[in-house]
Length: 369
Image 1 (cartoon, rainbow, N blue to C red):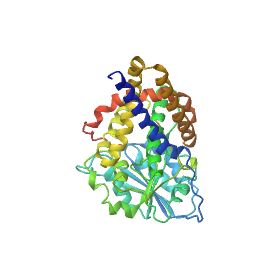
Image 2: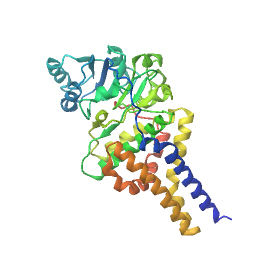
Image 3: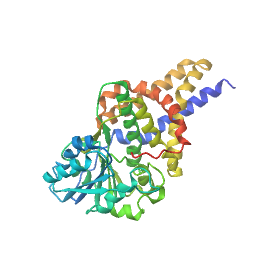
Image 4: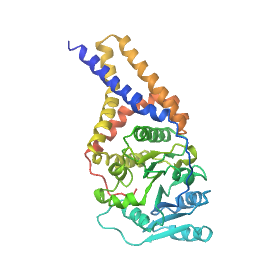
């Protein structure tokens, strides 16, 4: 009887994996936006926070300022106590782009780590109801970024989730970072399409100013350095008020970390906010991650205790369904070059969870991110 236990466990874990791919992740893979009867152009405030990011501002902010959006809009850049040339760069840009609104912060906010205070100041300074958020190290994929993101705000919609990608560069670290970004997006975009939104990413996120004040801003988690994007959305998103935009012209692109230590530190900070999600989201995500973590160890044990043909059959079924979903989803998100490596990335996720398991109980460090 004991010889059957690994096979039963492996079978159940495989079923759980297939459930997530067939119930949720296929929604992103085969997503088709509804045809719009009317096209709206809202007044938009783009919010960008920067701290000692003069190089990023010089490279990326012109792409935000030069958007092809004729309706009323402004670009609010919050300079959060920068000690570099950020102030002078912004003043120079203002001479050519009068829609640029500069907010200078010259004092640190006590007991509010991270960028929640500067972001709050930017939102309070914003003139318009539709807020579009990105980071100083992000550049829009096209001149139609504002237009496409704001167009998703129709009756009842208060939150729009976009895709914040990383630029393609050489090296295994770049592929791992981009796969991790894709895999995270596969989850939060699919769940949002399926009626269970639970997070967004600040590199490409839009919501209503009224919603921000209704939620009392970041008051529920102001003591944490992270969560200005995912925890805020986790607290106020629902089936009725949230939608996604998957047009490639509406993506943003960031420069990825080029050192393993930088990426590992960044991931630890971001993963540390997951334990503050709503219980239902922690349970649903935890079940998926647990099944993914156990899949290959159970497969190896079952190979030595049961008929290998059954094990191979389950593996093939899983990889075929997973491969189809990955292929379609990667194509949608502009990450098709990663598809050929997906079986290796699938195995990598076991080690990924081992590496970052400690972030579940660690207290996040007070970094500005």
